[in-house]
Amino acid sequence: MLKRRDFLRGFIGAGVSMGINPGSFLAFREGENRMEVGEFKEKAWMKTIFCMFENKDLETRIGELATRLNCEVCWGEPSSPDIIALPFFISVIDRNLVGENYWYEYIRFCRETDDDTPCLIVDNNKDLPVPKIINKKVSHFDLKDRTAIEEIIEIIMHKRLKVLSDAKNQS
Image (tube, rainbow, N blue to C red; front, side, top):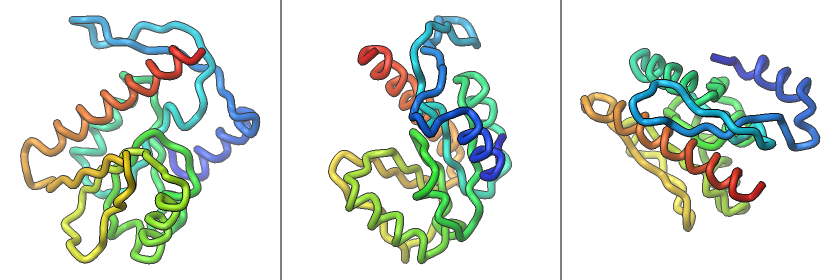
């Protein structure tokens, strides 16, 4: 799993300033734990899961899934603009760690850019609003619920496969 600084170093060092990274199209084969690979140009955001939460079980499961899906897990720094600054195809966040100021900045960013990137919220903070943007999937999970982690993993997996399928169809 990558820390923010390592992610940015690799992000810049890989020439992503041009917007393209070599990548692979991945698809599950029934009964296998691995992915089938076919070539196309993959942008950095297409393989980045942004995380900012504190839950070891969820961290472990997302890490395992990221390996299976050829993704990177990028951990944002608490109380920083990382949720706005870093590119990703899905986020799993605890708004308490994002911080109230940056959370409101994120909502404003989503509104101004019509951002439709899925946001999976894993906190119990009833005081902070959720982004209400057309086509933006925002889901709230109580990690005390035994099924929550499985649901999160399922959403991430389906979103990753959709992103790759869409990219392959456009190439």
